[in-house]
Image (cartoon, rainbow over all chains, first blue to last red; front, side, top):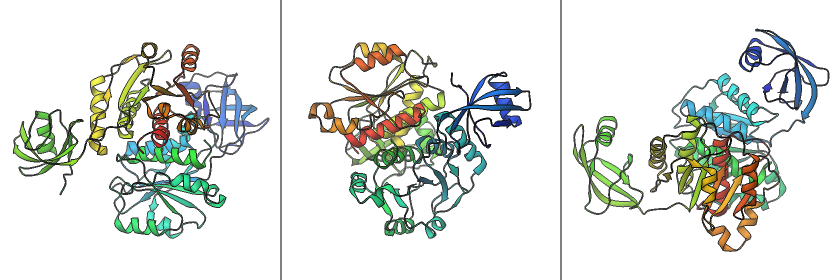
Length: 246
Length: 246
């Protein structure tokens, strides 16, 4: 029987491999989840797929798991970046969680001209991405980058990465993804990014710069104005269905 | 210049119409938002579109707004129900907010065989739907129904309402919406509902019953298991784009 508990570990996984637990992990498995020696745990590390492991040693502050067999191969998400401007804490946490669930490969918080929040706790956001991966059965954890300026990100934009850019000022673009799908393979199958605008919208300078990029594709998300967290999930849905792994 | 503040009122709106404010509304407009006599407020009531109104009288506990001109016609969402099993409070609130933003016409919480939460505060959820409509620029507020049993809802299921049913046990159904789109107009253009399963999944009895319904259409939401709140937004996105008003 496969384990009910899934745990991300930063340790190699493989046949015969043992995995030492740190204090937090031991507390979670033995204190909170009440697992005993012999119990099963599913492990993944973002590189070696998912492994069923058995509790070999358990104490309050440490423990050892032993890998038994691989239960899933590594499934990398498509090469999709989610770029967003941090908003209120709960909604920023939510965007990171949703990006991990929806299958983004990398999550990039950016400061825009109208961004209110100027700091993020990268370590906390990364922990949210890990937790979401544990919950959603994924074998990969997207990296949450440090906050950077949108202008700096665009200064070094990779030439071959397409950019889906959601602008509430735009309408009538609903067929964009159909168009992209019917284009030459390079556009549709190469690396992509989705950029979600800040709550206050883009500045005119930002909008002009984005519109001038040859990699940019504007998409509309319907007649109602979506909050940034809703827009992130909706945009990833459109992209995953048209070009991703759905 | 159009107003920055949008307010839902349960009062007729029209040329020459005045709208009395209750204590909470007066506190919000004059205490929190610091509006004075002559300031503009955008009003909607779910029936008469959006109206620009002017503050005619303002005091601590009451006030009067006077309609000036209509700024948006009434825009009804498509006839789409969102049906979901309540989960933890914050995520239930979130589902209601997202359903309103994404353009559901009606929101129906249901108790399923594996639902943990057995009560909801319908009035609180309805208030979340109102707030979401105020935020997203909509002119319509979806009704949040009282909690009912899924089995009772299915007992009286309207014959002409199609049911999009998201089951994490299903895969390989990604072309369902394309298929629906190419069918005869009755299926695609009639009333619809989206049913999001509970966190513990459907029971075997529920799954069998749903699968036997002629109105049921199973759809997959990708290779990762989505939380119920994520699934709600993703499913509404697919539906709105294929069959709705996006």
